Amino acid sequence: MNTKKITFSAMCILVNIVFGMFVGMLNIPLLFLDTVGTVLGAVVLGPLWGALIGGGTNLVLGVISDPTNIPFALVNIALGVIVGFIARKKSFGYKEAILTGLLLAVVCPLIGTPISILLFGGLSGSGADLLVGFLVQSGQEIFTAAFIPRIISNIVDKPLSCILVVYFLSKMPKNFISQFSKQTYKVS
Image (cartoon, rainbow, N blue to C red; front, side):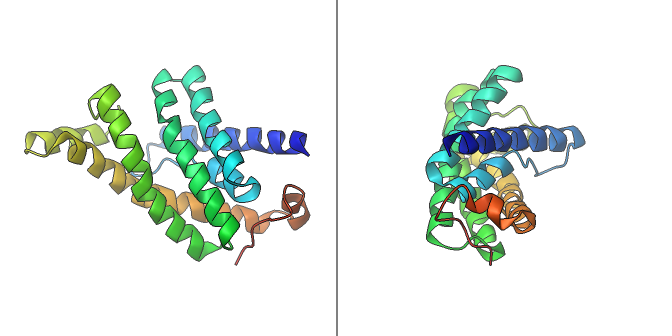
């Protein structure tokens, strides 16, 4: 059973990396989709596995692309835990996906912004840095200036990521998902 969970988790990490790189290559504003695999793993396997998938994703990205991804593992770990607990308590349908995504849109920037400020002066190396710079120059505190661009992008990205997971799960064979847990999610 653990071999299947480890294999599924590795596939979820790969989903995070591939979706994130694909959207990054397309340069779609306000969209990352780099946590779809973490959400999927957390819904199917639960909060512990979701946290492992989230943290594992950032570690892998830190090794293969950019070491600055590693400190942000805390954001992805928290995301996996939150989604995992929500999916265990309720069915994870479209309504829950949207509400969970909106919750994540606030929680993830609350965790990521202090990391960004402490390590990188509030910057992220993306186009959002222009807004950060503008807000700082207009007199905003660094936390506010770094938080606002993150929450704006997360309000789009996190609910859409959760909605995609519900869609993917609705297309997967039920016996495939149920092999991982007796307490499997319910699509509503």
